[in-house]
Image (tube, rainbow, N blue to C red):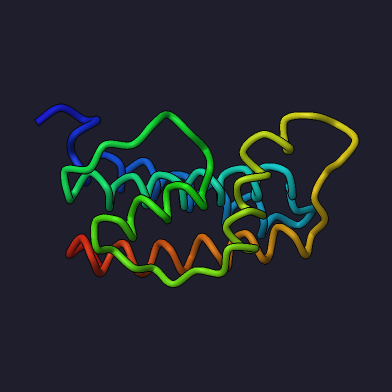
Length: 128
């Protein structure tokens, strides 16, 4: 099974991003942009792991709401708030451009959302 078709490969990448997000956030001087970006990446990769586990195709996208809708379409119901998913989506690109950086509270929320998705996905995939 190639990495792109292996939910475990997606989950491993998600775990690395989760650890990077936590590490960036818990520094003496938090790296807020990095924490938000990696929290988004963690959540995105876990949603894609869920889709792969069901053999579902998905486009190359960072759109968390779309990925959640695709999960619902194959019977995986995360019950996430659309506002939270949209906030995470923004961190995939917004964090790459100066001038509209997220705040410390944004990073905390991003980690909490990613943590909820991570917990659900790990149980669903039998990893946690």
